[in-house]
Image 1 (tube, helix red, strand yellow):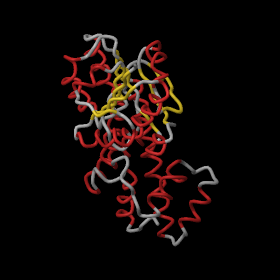
Image 2 (tube, rainbow, N blue to C red):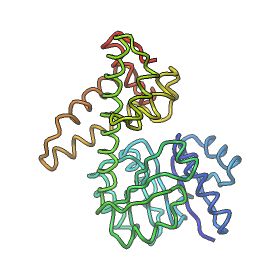
Image 3 (cartoon, rainbow, N blue to C red):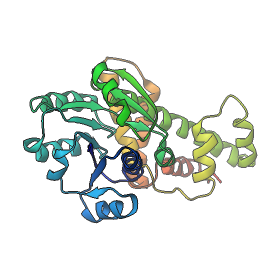
Length: 294
């Protein structure tokens, strides 16, 4: 009976582990779940048919998935688990981590015969619930191909390059999310100050060349409604834009727009709050323009 383990039951981890459990129910496998707060693992087991486990117990799994806030959190878990890992295990890290950390983590785990792949995801909580996430896989091609069948939460899984490449693509993707969100917010705030109906403005933008996921989905559902539901935190977005800038520096590239939005995300994280939803980035735009986007 094949055993998978999922470590980290945050907003994304809960539905991702549930997707693994649905697959396991069809194939006769089992899914162990772990979280720093054991009550979350127990609740997940009760609702989705997984098995709550101690961290040490998850080392028996043939595939270990992690979905934690940062690469530093993954390093901590590796430190607690590495004495218990079995050679041949595959570690798939779905954290939005740092490319440098991925390379160091792979080297560290290979000393125990464990293969490491960076595999961050995109698609949000709704995509995770639907089992339709996009997965960006970094690592050797043969190892990526061998693990594809285990990605029950994926709608699309793309091998983007060697170790660290998945984290690099994810960081740039999220920096572009921030750019689109901020730029659209600026435009709407200016239109609002001019007395334009913002719902009507978005209807035009979304039928025209200025549309984006921010204008089509995020702003109508989260900003205009003033709900800002906490899913992906503003502090995590700022972390990702920072990783994107580390990548720019490492290749000696030039990305002034990404650099500006990174600074704005860090400022918003401090001023608005790191645990606010990432769409609360636009509250800073609103403050700068003295204009609510609604």
